[in-house]
Amino acid sequence: MIYITGDTHGLRDVRKFNSRKFLEEINKPENIVIVTGDFGVTWSNRALYQSIEFYSQFKCKFLFVDGNNENFDILNTFKVSEEYGGKVQKISSNISHLLRGEIYEIEGKTFLAFGGATSYDSPERTSHTTRVEHESWWKEETPTQDEFQHALENLKKHGNKVDVILTHETTSTNIQRRFCWSIISPTTQMLDEIDKQTEYKMWYFGHHHYDVQVSPHERCIFEDFEDLSNLDNIPYTTTDEPTNN
Image 1 (cartoon, one colour):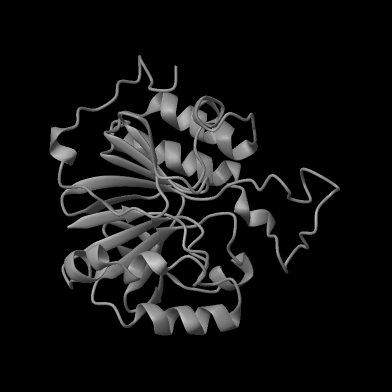
Image 2 (spheres, helix red, strand yellow; image 1 turned 180 degrees about the vertical axis):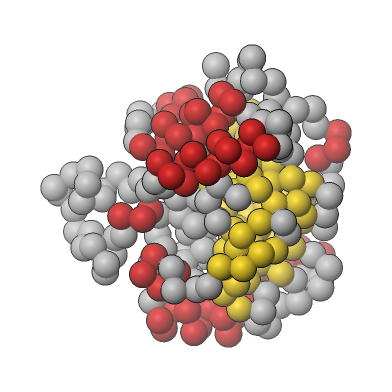
């Protein structure tokens, strides 16, 4: 079984892994938990050591897309290998990072991973920030055009259709419609284009720290664990009528 959950920020928001549901239903060797960004295990060398020790106690496997609260100086030191038909970085025996623009086949389902988000208080967006590059902010939080093109090329190889899209940020329309504020960033512009071009059954994203169904095909997730057992019963969106229009 595959489960989706939201941000953990290193060990700051891991209380969900002490819940009865997780310990009794999810924590099994055959299960996979996917975290939609801000996993935070590489925030510092100390956080990396503590996180690997913490997650090693569980039987299930953890996969994650990166968010905007990751130390990319540390994350980028991990070697790239292959898993589930796509490129990953293996952090430990039961933790793997899903790279931007890669498409994976897991349990017979296809997943597009496209992590990253542009922080509202990044030095590139405002001079009123306490973020310091290579200490509390990394420019790699925003996907590059090369990563975006890589995603589009991989989608084209799959007929612009996947079962699930995994991101940290969401589209600009979703932010305006559901979270009642306006933001247009390089990341949201890329996600807007992916949404227009891709057919999918479900799109999961974290970042906004809510558990809410944004549309029949899009869910913001934080504390919940959503399993994909019902995925076969969900129709694909259509590119001529995107969910965000």
